[in-house]
Length: 407
Image (cartoon, rainbow, N blue to C red; front, side, top):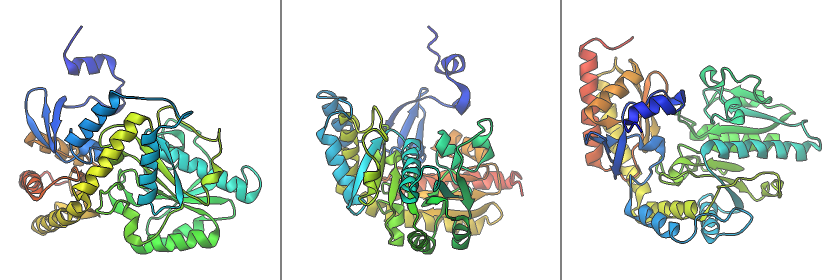
């Protein structure tokens, strides 16, 4: 058999991601190595997934130990790790709720969409009478049919019509826009606390506070997608905590597993009974192995004080980027986000800049055509940011000097 990885991809892997440009074979902390031995600084983290770095000893040990004991028993039976993880997440969400486990952020969001429909059915007394969900323009909630329908982007939706009915869209950080979009058929409002794939656009604390009040007044659910911005990425366990609000339900995934597939939904006690046996389910959600891994991630975040690390070094990198922006105001157009979820808008092709940074040994993801993201592990230190910023500055200087700016 052909052992050339690139050729095996060409011949056998579906092309929905395009052809990946590099083959990674090993990772430790914030470092990655490809199959040629080249070392990279990872500021992508599997797109906000490897939250405590690659192959953290605590996570590796938890997976190894649990794999030797029990992998899966199905959700027809109890397993202690799932119960412990649910209790931990319920505590993080402020208590008075229940947790459902799945395998990804898209699945978590599907569960939130189903919650909205169940709520509307109960509240109106008839199925299909109160079913609409108000989402934000520029949102991204996944690529399942429900997730796509909640994501108003042509490149996501094209080719898949007809989509799921009932989604309407309002302007992020514009309370009047959301108020106008809610009518008697609306069951829920569904937003990302920080829009990730859309370009790193945070919902302001004032907007979130107003939205909470609006949902209470109109009798609709407030559902929050924290798939990318949650689990400590902003310096709070949940990004919405800064606004001092409590949603009715929360979707999470990505960094929750530190690299293994997990999604979760927290639902407040008032609405948790809407899910009864048979209304929702999953084969692999919350298995002993995955729950053990997630518990190790949460324990590491607490024991290594990673939330505090994100606050301190997030402020540091933001100041450094603000300084760089003043030096190259025609190239660096905006800096957005919080903590270790930073979007840098540039007057250039984000895809070209991502490729040039990768060639220099820095891995970052784009967020649309003109934004690159810094999404390092929560363990990143000042020296990691210094190295990343030096590489980024060298690319900024080079592309500015050779006329790559597209404005």
